[in-house]
Amino acid sequence: MASSKDYLTFVLDQLSGLNGITWRGMMGEYILYVRGTVVGGIYDDRLLVKPFPAALDLIPDAPRELPYPGAKEMLLVEDVDDAESLCALFRAIGDGLPFEAPAPERRKASRRLKKTAACVCFLAAALLAACSAESAPTREYDETKFFQKVTANMALEHGYLRHDYTLGTPGQVMTFLLRNQDVTPVSVNEWLMDESDNICLYYAFCEPGKSEAIKDDAWQLAWPDLESGDLRRQKSHPRRSALVLQPGNSAVIDVPLTFLEHARPPKRQASYTIALYAQISLNTLQTRSEVFEITVFPKTKDVIVE
Image (cartoon, rainbow, N blue to C red; front, side, top):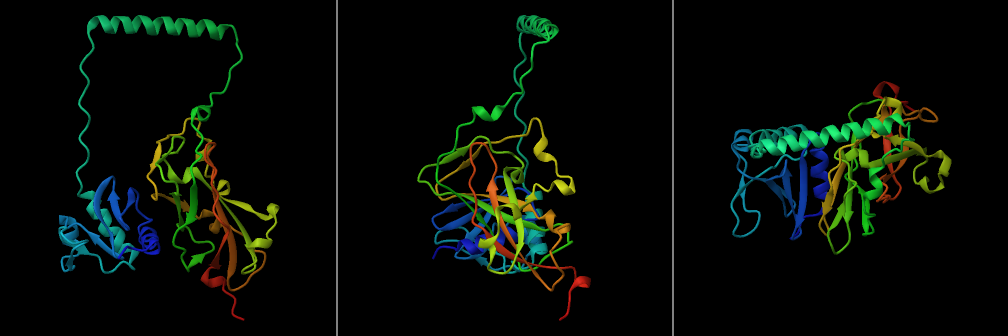
């Protein structure tokens, strides 16, 4: 039988403390990668990893099982509920992977080509200085206007939701999945290399089940969290890397919930309901998720016993 999407999101949430973890759907199962190298996968709702030396050191007694008939045996990860141990396993596997060899050096240019290049650079510098002397008006360069607008059917969904979100606690993260629902591959050329820079997250306190009644002016920006000093979106030359999604595949976006460190609820109580929605904030793609609710608890010392 095929693996469930809920189990995938649960495993990804457990591994949210690591970078370089990606996945790809195949025939109802999910292949897991570390820095682009296949290290295992989810098969019939079982987390299996290849028998790397690092994996054998950490889980030597793990049962060996087949991901599918005719395949090589892999190690069954039984304790997926322990996020710390699971991250340690995948971190050790990643540390043992070989790094890509550096690209070979290009052949040295001929002496004549070097002289030609030097002359061109000198002339270009002289021309630039002449233009600057005329005090011509400058124009801000907008690279995004050259990117093609994404018209494919894309969906933005939240991943596994925890049950222990807490106000005033740093390091909390929420996972979102950007899924290609089209029948053809989709390329998002405007995509930023820092995954969380592609998304905005909004929140509002509400009563349980009353998120539909929230007014537009009640929503507050949760990410990027400018109150905590996150200014990454103000980069003049952000790093980009085109995102390519095959039909049915998803990109995983981990969003820091730093707003919970300073969010101010309307009144003190034993727990709070917070409504959230996320939106891809690119010029060429502006997909929005549905509004959903999470339960958040105050710090232990602030809990009110009624």
